[in-house]
Image (cartoon, rainbow, N blue to C red; front, top):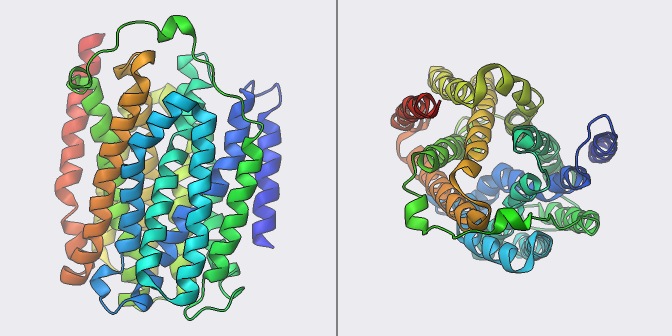
Length: 414
């Protein structure tokens, strides 16, 4: 029932976005509706990946491997996704990604039915490859608007759709857990996920290929080595990468720490993860207003300060509410940092350079995120939750340095 209500709400909001009051491109509404249906694959893996893997393998240090491989798949697929988008168009790339996600779901069904850890990790990697194409949706959204000033608003609206993915993913995992007979459950969960991916593909049939103005596309493209040396590119990548990696580092370890090590119930663990992923996207309701008030540099500062608060709360205890508050703030901080980094990135490239710069950005971002999630499991089982939190502090300090550099950059160009 909860899943049906979520889908109805998603359709209603998408219809509202199409009204003249919002004056948004039709593509944005379609992306808003389709994106959470495929994005919910990541919350499913985050929620049950470690728990299921701990049953499928006797080596507990490998429990977070499926999550890490999923993120590594995003990094590995980012460059091919950009190449396909450039040569075949955004719409073709979207369907290529959706196909990969659909196949990954079927592999996951088989893996859970046969209790094959190796096949499940491979399915997780495929989820990441498909996710790399899904990440291209935000660039399709940017290209679907003619006004650069609308980019933060468009990204905020698109990120808001992630709220539905936050609740859909875990609900799919729990609701359909026993739909198919399997040794440890969840085979039915991945079958239901395959259905939603097919539904998203049906919606995207109506997506119109974004048109890049020819006058903007002309010009000599600079070498990538020259582009990545720009201060604005470095600031953008560091902001999004550190924010994403730290979020993944703490989020990946949370279900294992809560349920496996501290003995909190699966329902409580689900609630914390759902709340966290919702907190990643709900702030998008306010970020356009915040950007007008404090600009992107202020948003970057807010995100950095919130991350420090996360560490303080996470270190103070391991009751359910400690995890809940830490993960809520972690989601909000991620939203501010990721939106800032993504909004700054277009300032570093010309239209004719966009694909290679976007691919480079995603490869770096998700490569570090994959490494962070892989290390999370190893460090958690080796040193415990408090040690995990302490090890995140140097990266939070690095965010403060990024703040200083960006403030100086903004002051210099004024």
